Length: 287
Image 1 (cartoon, rainbow, N blue to C red):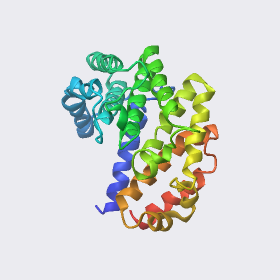
Image 2 (image 1 turned 120 degrees about the vertical axis):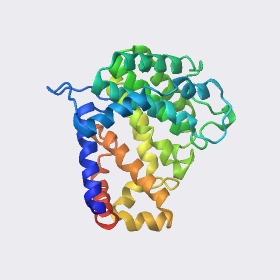
Image 3 (image 1 turned 90 degrees about the vertical axis):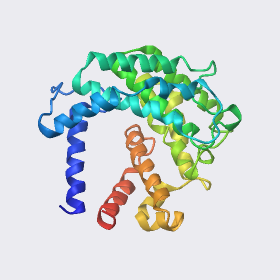
């Protein structure tokens, strides 16, 4: 099997898995409420849930949030990534034991929230640097996913407080989102995703306004200008970032996934065609 065939096969498998289990933040409104995969693939999924998802030491993931002393690393992304996978796993197998594990994980994390709304492990003087906002993104996504699954309003309120606190630090007249973190602010800008989820669930105008601000900053002189440069596809990105494909690849991923969330609410209505052009170029020139 050549590389392209392999990629296509894996993509089909992932697409099927996503459609069957549901995205962690999105309630399944389909008439098909549960699908059970059998055979080799089903066995591997069951093994992954039993021996990786459920076996995770959740307190190990929560522990960093109890100490605000980090300067540069990214431990704060792991809880959010794990719980989204755990919730998707629960949507697949409806395991009550797993549900309780997820519930305990969400409640343990919410206990670490500071009075100002911050959930994270960065020291105050290092907040907004390196992977701090990136970690807040995953925390917010995890809390929203738990709210969607459980209806626990405390989780939605906690996610709102995380973003509300960030909005006291970043925005017009404050620190520019594209000047925070790494890679011209693109990891930090990916918080656009939970911001849009919050707007969808609360209809609070401040979240839509913040989303528009984030997207607007992409095209400023200090921003990555990825939407306009995507019209030139890979050649423009390589010209901007040089030969560092890791940076370019991350930037492309951030752009395409975030505008998917933003475009339906007209936050970034002009972003979809360039992203499609960029995706087609990646398919033809890289894969």
